[in-house]
Image 1 (cartoon, rainbow, N blue to C red):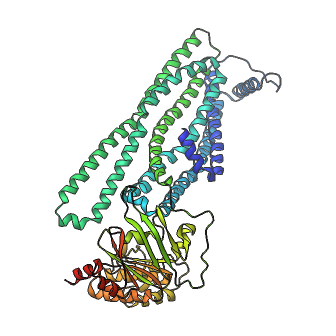
Image 2 (cartoon, rainbow, N blue to C red):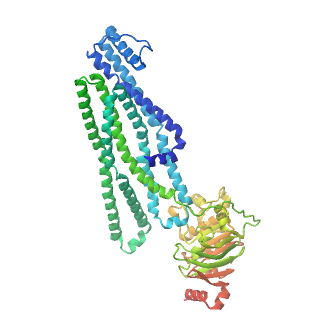
Image 3 (cartoon, rainbow, N blue to C red):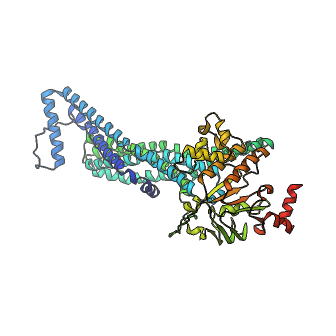
Length: 612
């Protein structure tokens, strides 16, 4: 319960008005419930001749308020029977019962009406917070997490919180109020009998608690297994071409079958334990009613009780009115445990620490010429894990307007090096400077605003061509987008599509060819007009014709701009101002194309291998 209160305090504060109104109407519901059942006593006592007392009207103050109220009600009923007859009085009590019931159901509806914005609003807020956190977390976080499991947390786990915790909030507000109201009336009717009830109920509660003790742990295991299943499905869809090429369908089917069988087994256990809540509470509640009937009836029969038979029946009605909410509340506690397990998985993302943060006192980049910037790497050492360095003591100067190419064998650290400049990762040793300022001393957003990226795999979104080119550039006009597309050699093929710049390109740009996707991503970088351009093997996956068009677009983009190029095809970087050769995380050669050929070293070896 403490965990639930912390959760509600965190998310429910914007909905204080709705909570207050819901509580108010729940109190009114309890009030009308008590007094609608109160009509049972006069019906039994007066209409069927169980009460022969003659009542006289009492003035307020002549006795306690309760005694005056009860006496005058019975006096009014006796007068009505005497003047109008028993049948009319019965009809009057029936109408009064209907009216109080109407008021009760209206207030019950209003209490739930004001709970609904809280339920749906909190779930909406959690989804927004999770998405914002996912977007803000560094790339390193996702190297140790599976995409399918993250999707399961964003969808399934949040849905479980909605179905379990938030859907139970109405019960958590309503039932305690009803229980307290019924208990209060029971104490007023007979405090002696109520003490016996208080002694008995903890035993029932202890049994219910023992049954639900392991439910949260089992629910957590179920949700973790569901994350594995979604991860497997996501990997299968993404790698379907390889699965078919290697005839691995049977292997993947067996793996999926094992996971779903485990999920089936865990879910059976969770569902059976949850299903046990209602019948067990029903049995224990009925047992409690039977015990109280025996105990209270024995007191009345022995003339050792402070209540009579009709009042005892009303007492039992109050007890049963309390038992039903108590049973539902016990079932709700089971449901909340499941939701808290899902909440723990959500918190793993929400509580993740982002090491890439803005400095307390950031420096400002004051440049008159935003089209060029310098980049310096000084004694940079970096590794994804503490026991292995990917880059070792890197020193590299990129002057404003220069084009520096980085080459080397696969795994030499080329992509890692360029990922450090926009602070996708933070280095352990050394420093990286942009225009003479350490990147740690700049705001992350300002640092990345200087840079444009074109990667080997064009990352596009399931949106229109216009929105993909204008991505990240607020207020971009159609004219600016078209101009960027022309520079990227993309305008002609865009105009040939069915809706031009408004054409939807499908998931990851699947409706476009590889060269078309790459030219769209180049147009996006052109529109951003970055001071520093990072090209990560932007033409390595293209055919000759597409490469020519993309290379021409890249040359247009690189004009008078500081550029860092990673290239496998060495023919694309022969005109670079500097070529940096990486080998096993170290710079082994640095110079122009001609200088490195003359040294007859590793660069010459790489060139000769591509000419074979």
